[in-house]
Length: 294
Image (tube, rainbow, N blue to C red; front, top):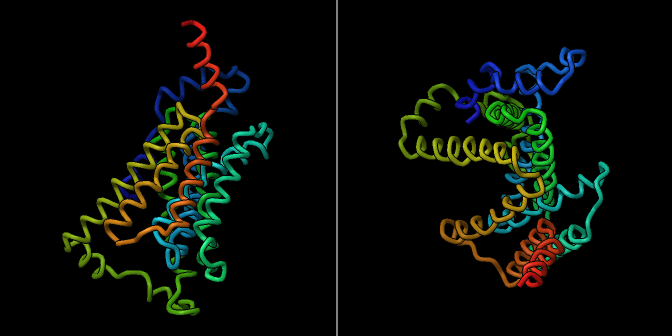
């Protein structure tokens, strides 16, 4: 995915973006605001750094956390965004407080509702992912406000950073076995023969194309593009539907099934996400105006 999108990272800036900056800036400030490929690329790479931490935490957590459970925990990113808004000066609404509380109880039901002694460090890693993914969405919103026509470059920067962080994790921290760390990087980096063998296997090649180009590069680009017109809070609300698909695929592919506590926790998380992301007072006010007009 990173290499497929790399040409977009080094492509020239769009004339539309340059003209937008030139028209909105005064002559004295334009010299300091003039965009560059480096500034846009670095903004994307910063977002990619937060997402990379989320991906690694997710992978570590999946060693002991069921895929369906991990997907519901990940949906708590919808609560992270308003929390960040509040920390940096925006007021925290009551519906966002209620949503955060429901989601927190939902995670408790998912992770510890059955047996508190079963909570492991890997499960703790799963709780890191909504914080990092929420932070990524929050920073992506700011980047799209600053570079509204550079969604492709921002997405490419994200993927390139994910590649760099993943490679660093593989070389420096990838476990060779239980509680052992790999000392020789050559033991984990694939050889050219390994890569050629993988690419010659149709099943592996198909998985690389599907997970690399479709479910990673294309979806990250679409997420970035969506933040041109949607806020981070609105985007993470859409993102919160991912657990529904995650649980469905986990049931079909991995034969996983949520427990009774899992269903309760899932419902609480989804409920918290919906309550946090929708302005219900405006909805009821509009509904009342319609009734009054009738």
